[in-house]
Image (cartoon, rainbow, N blue to C red; front, side, top):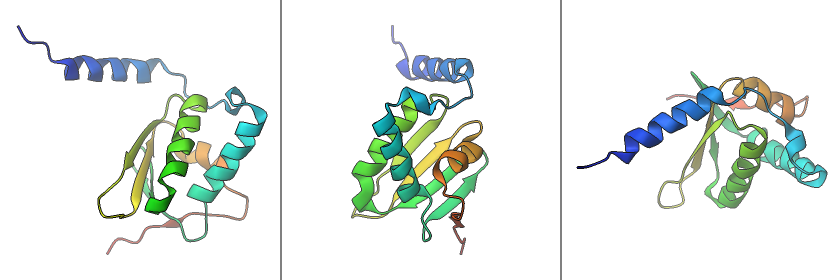
Length: 128
């Protein structure tokens, strides 16, 4: 007899996503960590030369490979305060740019509200 754990994992993930409240709570992070997290989010996601692609259910960011550790730290903290969001970090070979995809209800509004300085807007990635 064989058990397909992939199906079980997928079903559990779907159930957890359905049960998670659609709300972010930055106060789960200690004050210093919260301040550092917001600064990191701004420097990663909302800089003048940043490329962002709107997805049907979220956003995708293209980031320099040299910022992998910062991307991982951002995702680790963001998972604590916004448990309903999903994250995918794509790290291609040969030092190519990292793709960070963030999906879930309210991701655009939530990230814009907490991370973007009032005078900053991410630039849409041009499709050739």
